[in-house]
Length: 292
Image (cartoon, rainbow, N blue to C red):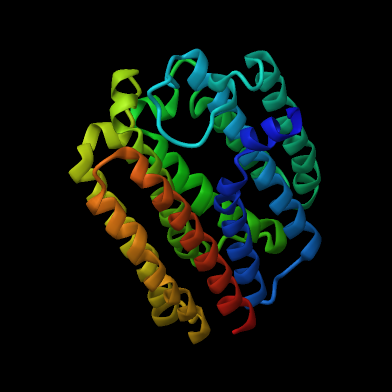
């Protein structure tokens, strides 16, 4: 039972948002003949650990701040459900982020001081997303955090530890996968818009309202779709990178749900569908860049 509770706390379905940008950064490195497998593997492990640490931090801090209540709809939060003691979850968060720092020590030996800045900022934001005196998610900054750190920084940082450079390609590719990772958060926050508002959690969805949040979701999908075309047209990416656009049919079901739902619970499948879009897009863009 305890193991199952820790697996729930880690939220395995969210790990695609951590893995996809590392894959894309590695595919870009392969395209530019700069791939280095050991730093790439370390970047992947570090990203997964930071994502899990962020999930544990969210579970703990949302509970102690009163953001998670019995009214909340969605996947089980282990602290709120009483499956794990709050202090155990806090210690788990510290342990996982500590392991991420250890992985970062190796990456610093490869990439130098820029990786120190990236790593420490990423670990700090994992906690400050819902913790600290000014939690990002409670002030409408969660979407910006995800786009930057699960898009631009993750792709660019992965490329950097392999090539010791940060080309414009990394920013463009990071924008595409970052947009989809943010879309995943948007569905989550749209589902929780009422309970978050009651708890004083002023996410961007709460600030924009349902209509504005739906528009944001569509805009993020459009950004992701534009990235392969921009890369092929302006940056000399191989035409195979356009394979990422094959995810378009997969977007229809979550898009229809986001616009047609009546009850928040109906958005739970859209969350999983958006995660699948993110994963498939990441894999196809990685293959298109690397093999092309």
